[in-house]
Length: 109
Image (tube, rainbow, N blue to C red; front, top):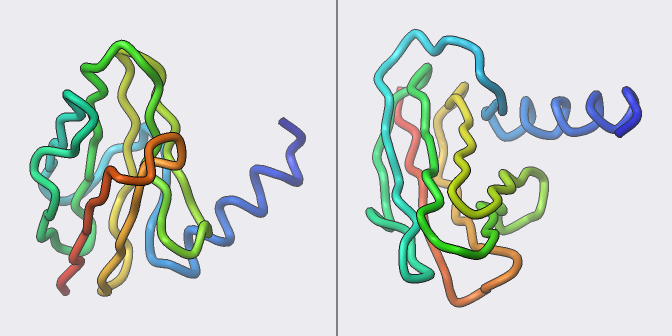
């Protein structure tokens, strides 16, 4: 992917108050397991600086794609992905490949 595409993704995430990556988070870590085509837990309540990690335990790929499509985390089978909460808000997300999979992140100060 070109550098411009990464820049656009990070700017969109910053606008939502979220970042993607493997950097160290100052807050707590929250794990969402993907198994049997569902997010567990489906709703997480976190604080700014907390890391949210999805662990895909299914044999197919999944995503965590915010409803307005401004960010997405893509995970192949047996892979994980993460974001770090940067500002408060409520973020509904789905799996782009399986739209019946729904989750919510609530970021508190």
